[in-house]
Length: 379
Ligand SMILES: Nc1ncnc2c1ncn2[C@@H]1O[C@H](COP(=O)(O)OP(=O)(O)OP(=O)(O)O)[C@@H](O)[C@H]1O
Image (tube, rainbow, N blue to C red; front, side):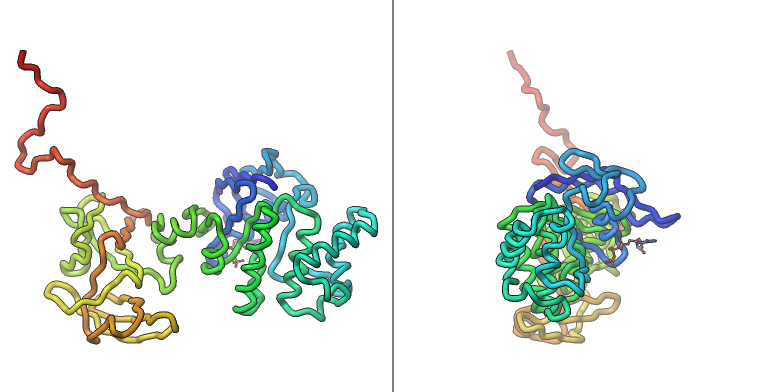
């Protein structure tokens, strides 16, 4: 059990910057997931915590002690990799007990601990097999057991489920969460699979281009994405993104004057270029109306639980998620959405735009002054 604190952590390979100044504290017992596209620096960050990569700048501290120059074996971290990294010529039992053997733990105690871990991971019947005689899921469980046996302070998972088929991934996901509930070991789990990230994380970190874009609970990140990148990266089908311009009243105008969210206003200067984001499930089809583009359903994908309707209009494409085709009585329709379902991103910075503050009650539109704050005395 340990707290991990990263301060200004940076990694460059020559002129290329893989990680650019990451500040992050992972609390004791927390299950933190790092999510991001390929090449965003998530594995490099994990490997710096493990001690498998030098840190170019900044510090990594475990339980208050800076470990930048501490050997990987002395950091108390155990790492689980995508490719299992098992010894093929050794039995499951020998693989599980190897680290204890190296550490000089007596044979009897070793055996006891191997059996206890095997019981926890349902590997007891497989102890005499070699890795080549196991399924992918069983191999991954052995890899987990090997990491668990030394009772590490921290588990570091580097895309451990990527080589498994879809069904097994779900099973292993649950197993890892169950183990975490039991052991409460501080864990960092790196993945590029958003479903894995959303379902496993206590707290989620979204990375892009070596930087942290957002940190929060999966719900925070889904409901209030902090940046244009996060909004587009999280959610399937992806959020609809409509290029828009801020008008004089703070409302967003798309194309030739369509104001799709008339009740929402943003705190940006007139003329600011934004992207208006709306999740496919938040769009509702309504009969065509003047001033709004008419969309035409193009491709409909049935994913079992819902339908994804991809529709086109002049200059804009949208996707709607609907429970049944009854939500689309006609092929041609306009779209609407609740103001609170709209996300706006400032295209200069990519940051989420704040709503425009509503006028305070004493603001008087005709230009007369509000009542003075101090009460007048008539004595
Ligand atoms: N040894 C290295 N030498 C040079 N560049 C490297 C090295 N290792 C990683 N990089 C670069 O650093 C960046 C981050 O790599 P990293 O492996 O951390 O990404 P990732 O987010 O884990 O990606 P993936 O999901 O594909 O594993 C990439 O641009 C990668 O090409």
